[in-house]
Length: 153
Image 1 (cartoon, rainbow, N blue to C red):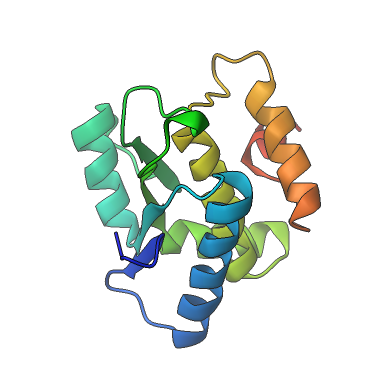
Image 2 (image 1 turned 90 degrees about the horizontal axis):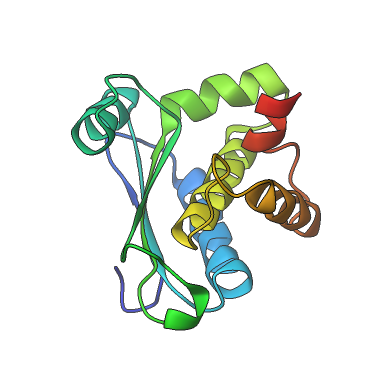
């Protein structure tokens, strides 16, 4: 984590303009969604996400975003560091093309989804709480359909 708050690390990825816009969006999420709690985000390759998914979740498959909360139950009131995200740039590119928007937008969708997980939400168990929160934040942040909506459609 950087002393300035949330940080983005690009591993095996190029693109200065993508870096700047992603860092700005991370700041927006930090202050608006996470209420000032910083997080770190790794944007990397599909193979690295697959390795992380296998190592930490026991699933030998690539995925688009993984969330690693700093604590078991990352409550917004707890303060301090929120946790880590990992995003597959390859997956983001493919999903952006499939849904007709930019890779920058897809990374933002994935990052929002991941931050909501860091805040303790779990769309598999929370009876729609995370889906409602994601939909509200997407509207506020002018983002297209999110991950939960895509699965439900």
